Picture 1: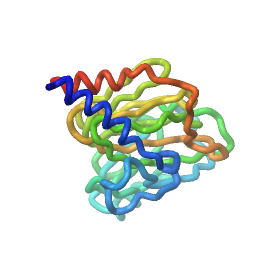
Picture 2: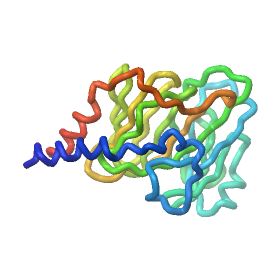
Picture 3: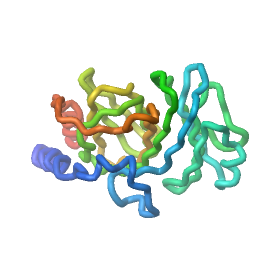
Length: 222
């Protein structure tokens, strides 16, 4: 019976791939957080980045006004998953005034560019749900508020467990993102890229080994 359930979960993952993923970075998020696997929370043009190792900082605030007062030139204020968030790209030791520091992810492997864009995505994946195979023109960082994450690339597999897990990938390699474990994955992503290039491009030139699918199967059997 366990093997049958695992097989059904893996089959469902193929069905649950969203055909609209290619538009995820242009489709604005609505109020319904359960609608669609991914959407664009915010896009920020950044003329120049600080010349030091950079991290993505995630901080929570009690109101948008409080977050806006703590923001700097590389900050963005968003509302998601029942909280007000301040997303900031800065050095690791940076902290905003007030607020609750949740995480910092990096260092971000940024490539030189004349101007940059930071695209912040919100996503809700059921276990087994995947994004279509794609590449990014800059690094992508992930933070899961809830649920477990699996990321497969030609270099292997990364797994993030428990609430608050984070993963990071440089720009360029093809990738497959999957929610694993036994509960929905609710998370954010940052794509920090050359503003003159598209952030996301679908690809069919790489075939995953199924590392995340096998991890999902093991999770379902427990």
